[in-house]
Length: 630
Image (cartoon, rainbow, N blue to C red; front, side, top):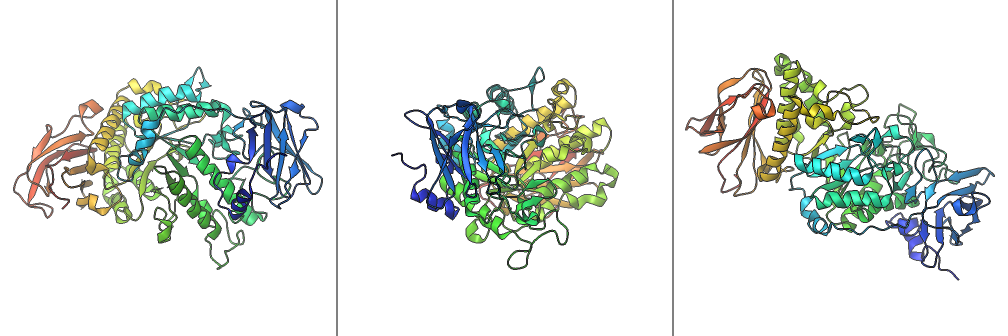
C-alpha cells in the first residue's frame, strides 16, 4: 500500500496556514520506481482526473480524495514521466467541466499553451562562496545598487528572446562592469499575457518557459552569484488573473479568491484577489515565497503592490468595499499574512530579505513584527521618487519655489529602511523616458540626469535603477523589443554610463555612503535652505575611523565660483565625483581634484571649503578620516 503524499502533520500545518513547503507535497513528483504522483487541493470538486500526454488527454487517470477532510486529491500514474504536459480535469458540484493547470506546477508549457509540465530536473550549484557570504552582502549596512531588469526586453538576438543561460552571461558581464551589486528581475513566474510583464501570474512555482526551463533559471542565478551579483525576484501575492486555466474558481468555487467581488475582484487590474483569511491560501503563498528562495537561491523578494493588499478600499469608491471587523479600511487578514510571510523568510532563509513596494504612509512596514511592524527588510520610497522627479521637471529658474521637494524626504528618511527607486513604473504608459523627464534642452537634460544620479547615490537609502536609465535611453520603455543599445556610443549617453560606473564604485568603496543608510547617525545637513541658488549640501558619515563624504548639488545652469561650505573637519578634501567632469561628457568645471579648508566659520562649523560648483551638477568630496562618529 502506497504512503500518502502528505502526512498528518502536513495536513495540520496546511490547514493552519503555516506550511511553507507544500511544494514538496502537492503538485507532480516523480516516483523512485517510475511514474509520477499527483496531489491537488480541490475540496469542492465532485471528481478530479489527471489528463496528459501519457493518456492522450482522453479519459485521464482518476484521483482519489483523502478521507481526512483536507480536500486534497491524490493519484499515482505509472505511465507519466518528466517532461510530459498535463492538466487537472475537474467536475464541479454543478457538473461543470474545468481543465486547470497545476497550481504547484514547477514548469509550464510555452505560452500561449497553458498546460503544466512534469519537472524532475536538477542543478549542481557552484555558488557556495556567495551563499556563505550572502548574509553580509545582503545586510542593511552593505552597499546596494540594484539594476532592475525585464528579461524579455533587455537585449534580444535577431529579435528573439535571450534564454536564461545566455542572458546570465551577457547581463552579469554588463552589471559587473557597471558596478551594480544586485539584479532585480521583474516577475519571471509564469504568466499567460506577456504584456503584463509578469505581474499577472498563473505559475507561482514555475519560471516562465519563454526563456527556458527551471534548470536554466537556476543556472542564471548561479552564474550571477559566481560573479558576485545578488538576485532579487519580483513576487506578486496581491492578485492573480482570471484566465480559465488558472487559480480563479479552481474547483468551481471561489477557492483561492474571495467570493464577494467587493473583496475578491480588483477593479483596477481586472484580476482576482487572494483570500488571505483562508489558511490553505496562506500556506500556498508562503510555500511559493520560500520555494524561490530555497530551490533557486534567490536573495530577495520584492513584494509587489503591498498597498493594494493592506487597504480594503484600495481603488474602490463608497459602497464598493467591506469594512473589517472593527469598521476600518485595513485588511487585517492581509496584515497577518504579510507578517507571517516575513517571519518565515527570515527564519527559514538566513541571508535572504524582503522588500515592500508600498506607496502609502502605512507605519512600520520595515520594522519587526514584534514591534507591530509588517516585518519587511526594506520598503520602496515612492514619495522620494515622486518629489524628486517633479523637482527635476521644473525649469531651473523656477526651482527656487520647489526647493523643499528635495529636502522633504529627509524629514522621514529614517522612519523606514528605504530603497530609492527609479523603476520601470516611471518610464511606461506615456510617462516618457527618464532623461525626457529632465527640464531643458539636450545638454541640460543630460546634465540634470547626471546631477540627479549624483544626488541619489549620496542620499540615504539603497539605490534602484531600471535598465536603460543608466545610459539615458530616450525612447520610453517597451516590452516589445530591446533597449536602445546603439546610443551608448554617443556623447551624453556614453558619459552617463561612465558616471554610473564611478558612482557604483564609490558607493561600494566608501562606508560613509552605505553603512548608515537607515539611521540619522549617517547624515548631516550642511545647507538645506539655499532656495535662491538651488544648492544643497550634506554630509554622509560612516563608522569611526572612516572618512565623511560631502555632497553638494547645484541644480541651476549657473556655475557658482567661490561658494563657501562649512565642514566639521579641517584639512584636505578630495574630489571623488564631479558629474560635470569631461569624462562624463560634462562642461569640465570643477575643483582641480579637491580643496583644503580655511579657518573661516560657515554653516555653524569652524572651518569651510571654498568651492566651484559646476552648472547642473553634484560633486562629492572626501574628508579627513574621523576618529569618532561625531
